[in-house]
Length: 509
Image 1 (cartoon, rainbow, N blue to C red):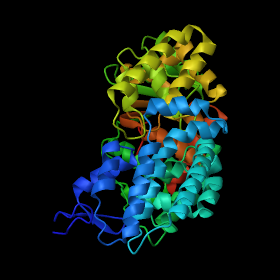
Image 2: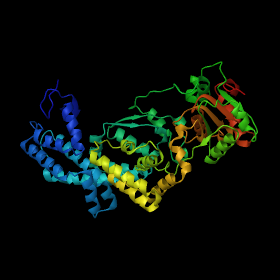
Image 3: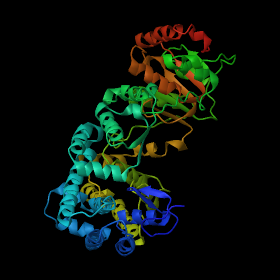
Image 4: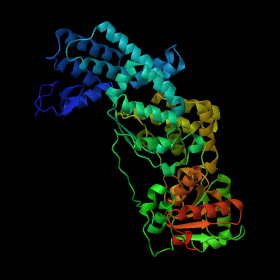
């Protein structure tokens, strides 16, 4: 059992900043980083400085005192921020940056195991970290991946930013890595390789359906070949039945060896109807008591398909893409939460609070303020400009920024009832959506059209793979007589032939 180097108790079992720290002191350090006044006092009065000089202890006391003086409640910070004359972005980041200042000051002191830090120099470093932290957040949050290289440039040229990132983040977890663009990939690899932050990524290049907007699936492949990464290949599909697994595995070279013959070929139905009777032919194979989805390339085709199916006696609900769906700034979660709060009956203010990305201990006062602002937003829906103002007030209160074009998209999402179904899609038994919107979802039965996938390039192949693997137990392929559909059939046969198979080996005609 190690001795905690802060409280001197023989229970140190955590390592931070080169020191053995017990769980209690570790929790207090996290509280310090969040500006908790009790923990500020603890570190000022109780930290063990036996391995530091006397001057170091004095500086610890000084910094803790300065932090105490800088501490404000969230509400007070908002009021103060409105009085500030600096740049608008700096005003909006002031509250959030305080936490970073606390952390940077403490980490700087704790790392000075052999002596002390000059007080003047420490002040300079903290102020520099504050300015650079504002720049870092401003550049990155505005356009995410588009500005990742600019972010990387800031980090590469800022010792303070690098130290801050290394102190704050011990591990980085990234899902859907195949959707990263080149700039984002370069930034993530810098954090991993240069800053030595342990990085865990999950991805599937076969699901690269966003190449059209800059996704770079080769990034994931390159990581697979990096020597400093351990690799785990996950080849099991626990969603789809064996026949659908075989079909999807034959689409790509790296998964063809997973093919396993099965006698049950009733789960993939190939239909060749006319444009006028495809609905009646398809409905013969749809179980109305199990969830199904019509997946199309375009929103228009998904909507038309839903109308035609509904007109023939099976109610399909078209799920449109909402105007706020493509917003990628760090305020996107708030727009979504506000929309759900105003649209979904059982979605409360507490649900909004639960979606706040930053961990925190919301006080009764903070919860009350959020509920009050949400109520004002609800009342302001009848006045577009008033609505913008109240949403902006909530964003500012939480430390985020809004944009006028995004506020317009939010307002359109709420006012136009046709978008409301998108927030409760799980309520509907049968839906029609684009296959882009289906990513991450699953359905008992899936209907796709051959003409949506020519299979002549990687993008089309990935699109088809994603659509096919949404199905759990039944896949219906509707192949009309047109050029694109014919291309699909010919290219699919060529793909299956590479592994010595025919379409009839995995599809029922």
